Length: 139
Image (cartoon, rainbow, N blue to C red; front, side, top):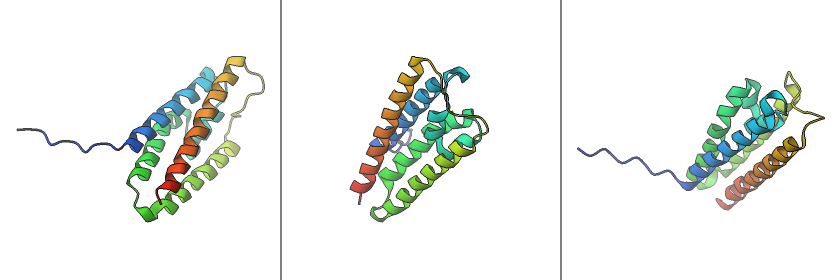
């Protein structure tokens, strides 16, 4: 007997997963085995980063896959709900940056760290532009 076919994943889900995995990998590189900065990880994971770095690393791909799926499968009138969810994520990110028990920023770091952080920032901001463009186009 043939197995039932699994539903096909829409491109936005795969894009969200790829975006989350890339952000997570770049954030781990920026952390530099504890000698770098956790700021990219805290920003990528938002409120999930309050628990621990491990939760944040695992949560980033899940978070952005969920946003990608929500954008793909949202009804026409649900865009405001997703915008509100993104704004809550941004607010939680600011809260997480302010309330971390250890400092997430470094003042002296090797040049390679700044290169990684710059690449992370370009990736993060590009992804945010794509997310907002898809949200605005969907309505």
